[in-house]
Image 1 (cartoon, rainbow, N blue to C red):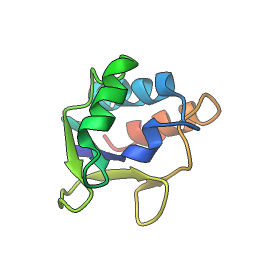
Image 2: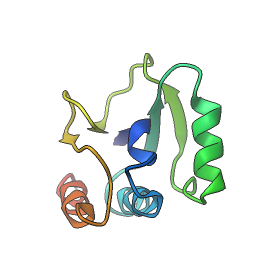
Image 3: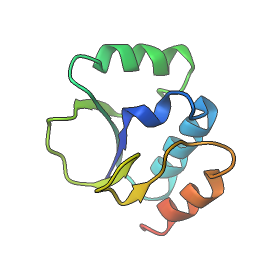
Length: 103
């Protein structure tokens, strides 16, 4: 199963350490691959961003928003399985519990 995270959830106001925790938990509990979905022309920018902060370890692929992948989606707007405006310490336990319930 794939976890697809919209790229806007790895940048502020999200906390990059919490983003990394989410990807770690996703890979540990349920998901085979974690994919970051990026707007066209931004994949290398997001990869550099994640790598610069050490948050790339558990991200397997970066895809364009136009590429169709089936999986569990975390986004800031519907339709998504988890709709959240940021990944932070305040909602980290909620997000982890939602990911664990997928298994």
